[in-house]
Length: 171
Image 1 (tube, rainbow, N blue to C red):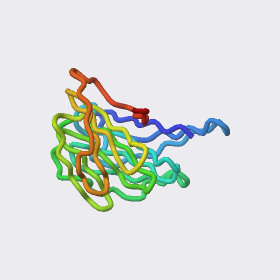
Image 2: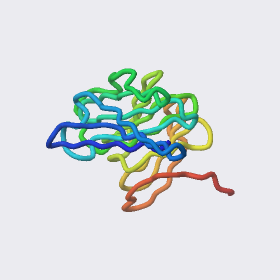
Image 3: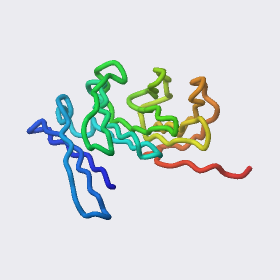
Image 4: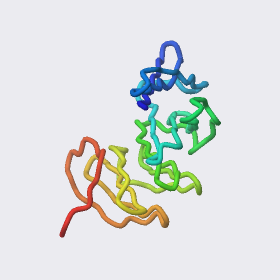
């Protein structure tokens, strides 16, 4: 299954296009307001590694739409953070089904809620090998322990554009 997020600002319309590659069919899941509103780039989409949770984030309103990937319908829309986030969000879902959003100068975790300040505006987000996350910012990446919210490492990379993946290396 391939999930693609579409958001049209002039029409304030947003939906997730669900394409089943094996069976060759497609289905649209309409997203309610505020999805589709605001400037381009205020949305993010994430699928859990297990495939049982699909989330769409709307940063400007601080809301998340949980979509049932089996029934292809919106289960609920709820807040993930205070409204008014301005940057482009990055979203991931952990193996334990926690939503993680990196937007503006913070990483926000749900279930339980935690906000972690980052050294700069969001420039990508990647899940680590264990219970950690790597958050990109304009001057590098910072590693955070999800259980405690503590910084556990950092790498300086001037003018970093985005972080998409991390892979453990050997010392």
